[in-house]
Image 1 (tube, rainbow, N blue to C red):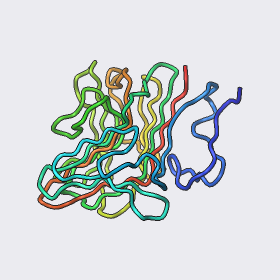
Image 2: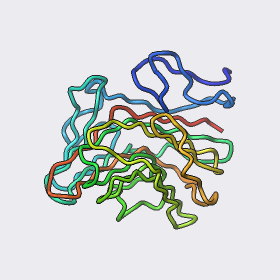
Image 3: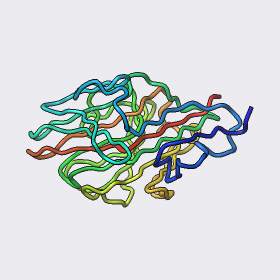
Length: 245
């Protein structure tokens, strides 16, 4: 069995790697097979309508939609309605990723938002939940979020075991209409490392092992407008990989 798996094709990549070359999905220290998912939204596969994407659960609050964009590289847009609180919750229909000892999970995405302050978004992993936002977080969640009312990019990690959110301001501010690459690695049930635009971010550290969820989770993206204006979260690509134990 090969020491580590590789993947060919597509532009963009996990934590800044160039997918036009054959590149590693993960460090060569993994001596086990891996599984994962990558989507760069270049075609209609899975896209059925403005509220249906095959394999994902789309929950709309107000007049929100999901839209495949005519944009180089392929993009999917979560588009809110025009009333405060309108939004879209977009999550894979099955929970397939479980933090555990000797099992690492890598998540990455490249996204862009239309507004730096007056919206909320989340990108990461969560248990099945149709309403992910800072006012109603699921019990088990790991990922990046921006709260309504400021431009601060936060990272949060919460588990049922601890019942509290280990949330940290990354020190990076979101800018409107500016793509940003986000990623994190859950190392077993020991710690979480975060990456912004391909660089390791050292501001976040898990306070205790109990902050890391030990339950199956699914990739999720969420958007909610914070004013009476239509806002959007655009997803260029996302990538997630986990090794078997």
